[in-house]
Image 1: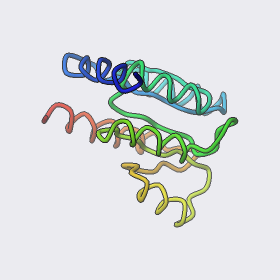
Image 2: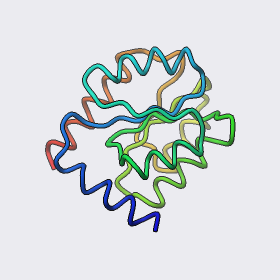
Image 3: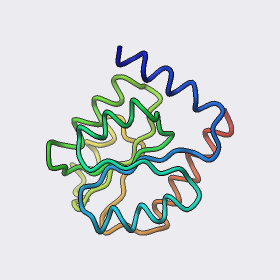
Image 4: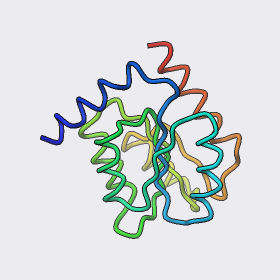
Amino acid sequence: HMSRVLEESKFGRTYRSPMTVMLVEDDPITARTAGKLLGQEHVLVSAANAYEAVVNYLLYAPELVFLDINLPDGSGFHVLDQLTACDPDAYIVMFSGSDTIDTIMDSRRRGARGFVVKPFQRDRLKHFLAEREREVLGS
């Protein structure tokens, strides 16, 4: 059933412009500043915890997800595992206050496409938006 919901949502991606971007972040200040930037030229979907992240991913099939590692109801890594398991095409960039090599390597190993350290640099977010846009338009 979950996969059917996702398939229908993903089908809509083909006809979509601008891209839909999901921000999974429980810190209100980061959520507001990142959300403002992401919502300028893209459709923004927000989630404040792991549960909302999975539900909203299934409903909206965003082209790009910025996913915080530390969420109030669990680990962003667990969300990453769930999303990549049900959608091999998922394009997920991890958000974290910790940029230890272990955290970055772990993100990569689990299928994340990138990593952004908080407090984030606007250019880092824009880099991934541009990269994903090229990938989507090129397909």
